[in-house]
Length: 485
Image 1 (tube, rainbow, N blue to C red):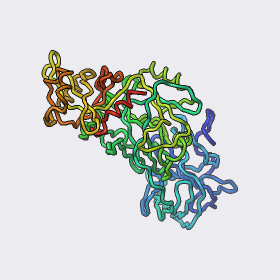
Image 2: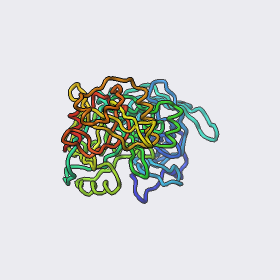
Image 3: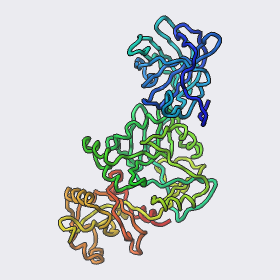
Image 4: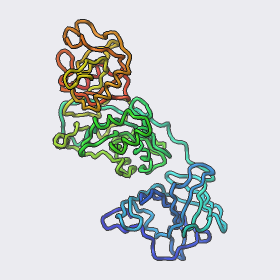
């Protein structure tokens, strides 16, 4: 039974529950991941009620144990009819067990031993394989309580997991229509690989663990129908329904627990997932996007904190127009047959933007005047050209009071250096004579309108600082590639 508009819910049926310690057994087992008031697994074993098979059921809040000797609470719930073994989909709020239900595992079981207080059985499922005990410990608070205990884990070892390096897209000039491609919004956030196991770990594109910075994302693994998975997506902060990198940059540098918790309430984030690299130890990077996407949609249970990036097939031009009307950064185009290439920039993934952004190294600052007196008027930007710093302009717009204060604090913490540019560069921008030159360790993201013929950023606007990128990665070649379709 799958979800539809007239689905029955998972309410218990009207027959008398059987005694699992004495009832004749069947072969089937099923585990349903149930996102009700609280997440739990419904563990069900086929047994006989007279001449009819039924699903004898337990609610297991933490799921069946995955390590030998580990014990998890299991609460006996009413038996269900066999048709519930295939149920997946939503149960309407307000009905019994309201919430999303997904099949976590299914297969056959074998009863190994049984006495007046314990079941011992072997599971051979799609995810789980091994031997468990269910021990009846008696009633408590009106519920029959049991303990689920793993005796032996027989799961095969998985494949080598792919490296947590995101695949990169190539800039292209304009949108297009092609039935062999899918198109999705370009999310203005921070790229992150999410490693889901019995906890959630967030890894930035330069391999930094940034989990501590986003406490509202610490339970993402509970929204994944798997023992473990590796996801690719973006951490996004929204403002009036539109992704805002400027709001997000107020979060991305924080590590103090108290401040992080405060900002998580003021500027909550969500994870927008668009790819699946690994599922239960199976490396999916060598499979086409169309296949990965289908599995992704079966694996993720969307919530307030995790959403699947929506896609449309074939019609990139219409999505580009809609994205512009909604104030988004642009769109992504991905070939359906494309394989996932960790760390590589590919033309199988394309990005189409309304404006351009660049990652630059901040090498100096010029004192402000007027309303900016006591702060700075602009920041001097550079990128690496081979091993030398190359001047690419100054940025003085895009700051509010908060970001001005933060930037000045960061600048004051840096050491001073000698002028990194030639006198010819300084003559081209006389205000550079007044610059305070600083250690080139700050990376900033700026938005701009292409490059000038001299290789300077046209109309740059500050977007925020980045900690997930090394200054040496900010190269002139990368700047050209990002502004020249």
